[in-house]
Length: 355
Image (cartoon, rainbow, N blue to C red):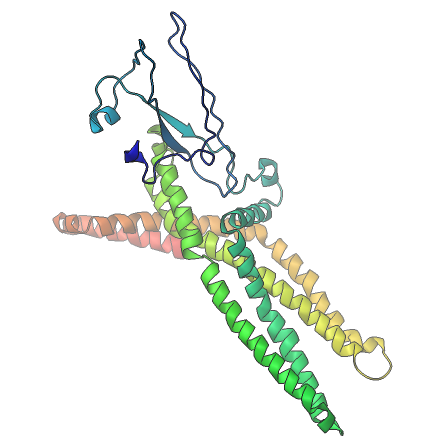
């Protein structure tokens, strides 16, 4: 039907596999099942969706019986309904079908890795372009700039520096080209990283769709403030501290590896006999890595507990503050005692959040 063609119609081959089948009812038979295959969702996680199926062609000497619906009234159809509502249930744990047995040990690490997998599904090529653009920053700063400056100083102070004039010009050109690539990579990652429209708003759309598809009794399982807090604060946290910080982690690890390689190259490229004392700076720098990793994993439990307590306190604060902002005109009808009681409650929740 044309009324459903603008964004609401299911597309054959994408949302379902089209079936051309003739259905015949025997005497006394009132129902038939028609299996329709729904393709597996290859993209990121989506909440429960639904679409309408309309029976448009009924053979002669047949009659379709069933209750009338709002669609009959809207399109002024006479007789019984010819529609069926089909729900597409997403049988996948968010994010990226994370297995439940991975929640027992290293749950936080597995959750982050599967969330990044979900982001890769959603962002596709833009994710990898953003990552490569960010990785070029340490390569330019650590490798290109360091090597260019080293060779420029060596050749400029050489006794026969006139023979190196062409190489000096070439190095200057390489530095200029690398700087241009650095600016280009900054533009690419800024346009393709998708921290707001590509991630935050997508998660909020998922929450909204989930909320709209919930049954009546499911709305009482969680308070309204939890949904509001998740859409405003939790979405921002998982994008800023999960999605974007993973980019920063990979970039910093790549820069650390490049730094260690450059330190080894600086020691090996020196003239003279190699000795173990030349590698003392490299060894001291490398010892920091396991110590830092041990300290980070050591505090994981404390960080998790503190984060959960902070979220509970902040959720109560957001609930009270959102109610106050939405009830501004009605506050004028409250007396001094009610206003004082409301202020004390808000102050107590603020202290609970900040403590």
